[in-house]
Image (tube, rainbow, N blue to C red; front, side, top):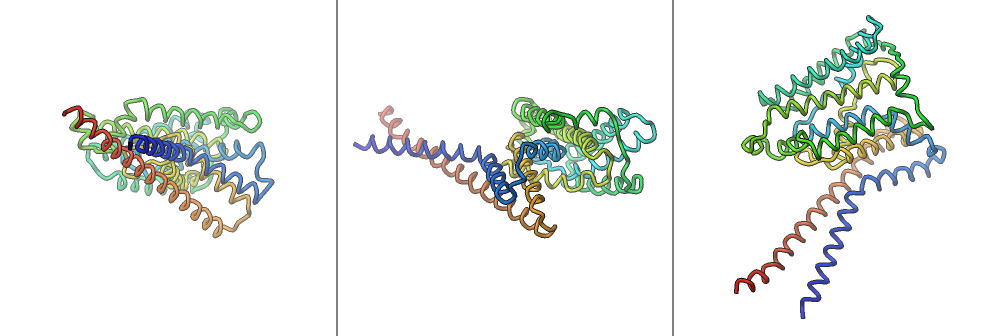
Length: 349
C-alpha cells in the first residue's frame, strides 16, 4: 500500500537532487550569460565578434594565475604574492633584455627568480611550518617594493618576435588565448589525475592525517608553490606581450582578483576541494564584469561600487546553491539508509 508513494517520493527527491546538481554545475555559465545579456542591453555596441576574444586576451595573466591559485587554495596554502612577483619578474626580465639585448635571457632570468622564490616560500611553509599567509604577505611586500625601485619605476620597452607572435591570430583569437586554454586544461588534468592534485587535496583536507597516511607533505607543499611560480612566469610572459613593456605595476591587484576568481569557482578557502576549469570561469566572470562596466563610462567610484555589489551577489548565490545541494544530498542519504533498514531487518529475521 505504501510502496507506491515511497517510490514516487524517492523519484521526486532524486529528480530534485539531479536538477540542483545541474544548476550548481552550470551556475557560472548562467552568470556569464546573464552578464553578457545585461551589458549588451545597456550598451548595444559592446557585444560583437571581437568582444569575447578581446576580453580573454586582455585578462590572460589573471586566467593563468587563477590556475596556480587553485592549487594553492586547494592545499590550504593561500598565496598572496603572485601580483607583486609578476611585476618584479617583468622588471627583471626588462633589465636583462635592456642590458644584453637577448629576450630569451630575460625570460630565463624571470623563470629563475619566480621558481627560486616559490621554492623558498614552499620550504618555509612546508618544512618550517610558517603560515603561508605570513610568508606570502612578506613576499608580496618586498617584491612590490623592489619592483618599484627597479629602474625608478619607469617602464622598460621589451620587443621580440615571440611577443608579437603571441598577439597574432585569426579573427581576434590570438595565440595568447590558446596559451590560456592549454594552461587551464593542463591544470585541470594535474588537479584531477596527477599525484600533485591528489596530494594537494589531501593536504588541504587534513595535513596531519595526510602525513600519517604516507603523503610527503613537506615536499608537495614546495611543489605547490613551485607550480604557482611557473604560473607566475607564464603570466609574466603574457603580460610582456600584452603591454609591450615591463612595468612595475603590471601585476597590481592580480593576486586578489585571482583569489576572488577561485572562490567564485567554488574552491573552499579552507582547502580540500576545487576545480581549475571553474576557477577559469570565475576569472572570466571578473573579466566580463570589468570590461562591461568600463563600457558604460562609469566613474571610478561607481565602477567599484557596482563591481563589488555584483561580486557579492554572485558569491551569495553560489554559497546558497552549494548549501542547498549539500542539504539535499544529506537528506537523500538519510532517506536511503532509512529505506534500507526494514529490508535488512527482514533479511535478518
